[in-house]
Amino acid sequence: MAVRSLEGNPEAQMATLKRRIDRLDEITNPNVVKVVTDHRDFAIYFSRSPIPYNRGGAVTYFKHIGLYVYRREFLLDYSDLPVGPLEQAERLEQLRALENGFAIHVAETQYESLGVDTPEDLVRVQAHLGVL
Image (cartoon, rainbow, N blue to C red; front, top):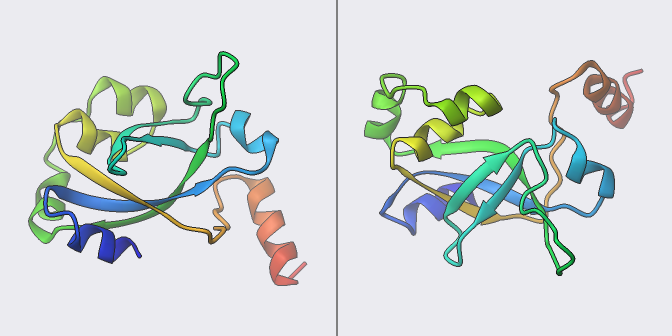
């Protein structure tokens, strides 16, 4: 899905995935990275905070699934891009691409990911796999 997303959007230098958030606790959890996209599914911003801010309207939140695909040339040059203040503040490496003017296409998936970013996540994944 992510590969097809990159192939179908030649202006994007990388692609990733998002999934609709259906659990309220994930919206406020800073370990669940949120993403907002434009009408063509290009990333506008990634954050550990709830985005967009809900002032009483109908809001759909999406979490970022931390899988990336890159165009070869972009990946070879990525580590040479300067780290900007947004990446430093959020500690999210994908913001480096956005801060340097590169497009990221974000395809929507229905699949749930089991990321391991905290000790609690590890316990949850081990329980899911039945290895506890």
